[in-house]
Image (cartoon, rainbow, N blue to C red):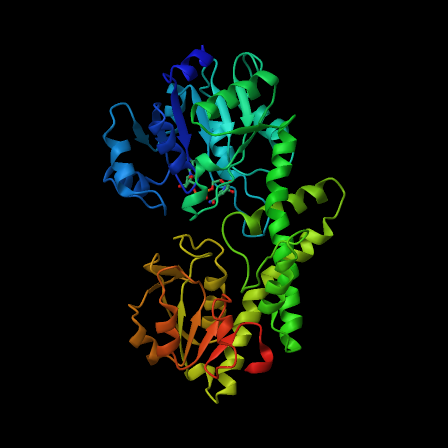
Length: 437
Ligand SMILES: NC(=O)c1ccc[n+]([C@@H]2O[C@H](COP(=O)([O-])OP(=O)(O)OC[C@H]3O[C@@H](n4cnc5c(N)ncnc54)[C@H](O)[C@@H]3O)[C@@H](O)[C@H]2O)c1
């Protein structure tokens, strides 16, 4: 039975979707003694893994090589492989559609394929972020068309991933996992599984609590970042240094958590999850006004940032359409290789649409593709940045030598707040300090 297979580590674990969430999870399962089937629809990724190359920051090539070498582990694009697994962890993307609605197509493709060949006593755990009530109302019926009931014939649990991408101190084993089951037995087995990975678990009484909690965690971030972005713009317009305001407020020591302003909010989670929440609210006849307004504020930031770059050039009598701009950093946050919903990329797109020449450098990104074109990164050392009319420090990757960048730039616009201490210089400008440009 499944319980024995979990405690003896003889269960085969299937991980569907080997991306930022699924790949580290698959490797962890293997390190804890399970044999693993990794199922990934992108065959290029499978080839990379077979060559022992990692495409996820903080996952070392040597760990991938160890996984690939281990007898019994399988990498495949075929969802049919799920039949051979005792536990299936679904880690496929849940992004937004072109029209900004929750996109469950990847998840439903997996569920539809699995439902045709479910095996008795399989435990299915959904790790992808989903809207409230999805596990019980949409996922369960897709898996269970006929056959023995859930909780006896098969087990369904929801356990959202909560890793902090790019943060080596907060990897999988360090963040407690919310675990919920469609029945008590589903939850018990899912907790047993995560305990066998040495991950601590927190049980919720029903899947909707875990679904909602995941959306709360990220909507909370979106709302607070919107508050500080709005305040930063108002402070900037009035000559008040927002960075000093935040650091002064942070001395309170209780009842206040600092959030920092910037050119927008990116990644696969924060800008997406609050939409999953507000869409669900509307489907129940309610408007999540604060979440919706926050999304609008944060989504307007790239346009604001592009305007600020143009203003900074105009004040130096440089025509933006004749200027050369260099972006340092294009990922959605520091020290990751992920450009999904990256605000820096949004600003670059806006500037290019306005006919302004922009180059970029990023230690983690070799090329950007959009609007049918591909842009290669430029090699940057400190000296090269002096060739540009304006350098934008968009992401403060740890490897950037800020002093060198400041020294070599004739005009530097800082999106990150890292150069806030340079106030008063006439060649370094803060994104929000409108009065100084
Ligand atoms: N990235 C994060 O830091 C993070 C954190 C917490 C939660 N999440 C959530 O976890 C889920 C996965 O996110 P991610 O960042 O790992 O996404 P990702 O895009 O990096 O990885 C998902 C992988 O699934 C693959 N895939 C898509 N459809 C498939 C199919 N039918 N069969 C097999 N493979 C398929 C994709 O090719 C991709 O490699 C999302 O719901 C996301 O919201 C992500």
